Each structure stands twice: as structure tokens, then as C-alpha cells.
Amino acid sequence: MADVKNLLDSIIDGTNNSYPVGGGKGPVYDKETVGAYNTHNNFHPQTFDRGKFKEKLSLYVLHDLVGAMMHDETTDLDNMIDESIMRHIQNNYNGSCYSYLCNARDRLKSPLLADVIQEVDAKTDEVEDELESTKDDDTLNFEINIKDLLKDVVDYDDFRDKLKEQVSKKVVDDVAGVITQRNDAPVFDDLDEELKKKDADEVEEEKDNGEDHTTESVILRLSGALVTEYAIDKQELAVEDSINMAIVEYCLNELDYCFKAEPKISMYARHKI
Image (tube, rainbow, N blue to C red; front, side):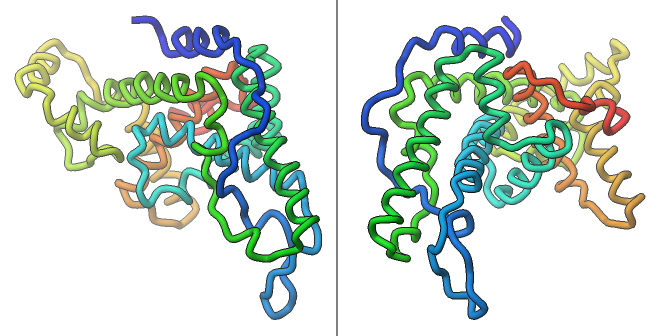
């Protein structure tokens, strides 16, 4: 099987679409990014910060890709994913989610990513124009819907499906040898079912062959490192949370790999695993 990088690069490089006229309309507004609050916490759309709005949309694009890698089984993990993405971008790239996408587009010469960015830019223009014309607070009472925002980007769904298929499998392969011997469950239900199907005899055979999956699992080593780091800071981190956090960070590492991005410090060096 080809590696994840080659599979996903083939999708990126093979995209030959162009930016469509009239992007999709959808609920993409967010009060946090487009105005200010007065002393009584009443919202007034006094100004529109284009940079913050683009950043919010770009964060949601990256969140959507990480969600795909996690098999779209991310209930109750939205804040964790967002915080992990922002920490990763700020610590490793001194930039923004928007610049991360733009730099990936330029490195890969990717029409797909170019179209994603153009949709973000177009939606920003649309929201700014609408706010200027309506001055209506209700204009902002919508949730961001990335599927709607990117519905006109040809091959985005295929790219997302490849991430879902290939990275999810890598997560399973990484933890399968040990997770079946522990009470810790992976974060997504579909993968949990796959792990339950792993034959016990196969696990025993791997043991007999002297294979130590506990030391081979990147995710579980990272999970242990996170628990230790929290303890050093005199904070407690539950094992289940540490596994979820490790999987999110693993997925961000895979996203860097696919986008040919080079963080300041690798995941392995940062956590000494």
C-alpha cells in the first residue's frame, strides 16, 4: 500500500478545477470575530475584522480535516481539537491558520488548496458586504458550516475521504497491538469496533515473536509523555484525555506530513518520545 503522503499528494496534484462563480451560501457567521461588545455585553457590529474572520474560517477548515482523520467521531472534543490546532500553529509556525493553508498551497502548487482559500476570501467579502449593508445583529446569528462553505471545491470531499481512510488506519495500526490488552478505548467508535475484531491469537503470536507493541506505539508513548508533562506542571490529566490529546497531535503531525510543512520542533523531539 502506498504511504499516506503519496496517496494524498496524488489527490492534491491531480486537481484541475477552477474557482467557481458564486460560492455556496451558508451559515458561517461568528460573533466573536466580526465586532465588539459594550460594557453591558450587548453585541454591536461596529467593525469587521477581516483577518480574524479569515482566521476563524481557516481554523474550521483545519478542524474539519483533523475531524476526518479521527473518523468523524469527535463528539465533545471540539474545544480540544481547536486548542491543539492553535497551539500547533502558534508554537511551530509563528503564524496563523490562514497562512498555514496559504503556505501549503504555495509549496504544493495545489489548485485544491487554492480553491479552499478563495472560498474563505470570498465568504469574508460576502460577510463584510452584508454587514455594511444591513447593520443587523441577526445577520451574525449563524454557525459556521464548512461543508456548505466548501461545497463548490471540486475534490475536497475526495481529499477528506482519503485522510479519513488512511490516517484512521494508521491510528488503528499504531495502537492495535496494545489497546486490545488495556481498558483504554480509542476516541472514535468505528475504530473501536475494528480493534475489537482483532484476533486474540494474533496478539499472542506477536508476543511469542518478541514484538513489543507497547514500545512501538507512538500514540501511547505520546499519551504517557503528556501525562508526565501535566504532572510536572502539577496538573492532573486523565488517561482517556491523554489518549484523545495524543491522537489529535498525531493527526496534526500527519497533516504537516501531507502538506510538506516543517514544524520548528518535531512531535517526537518536543515530547521526547
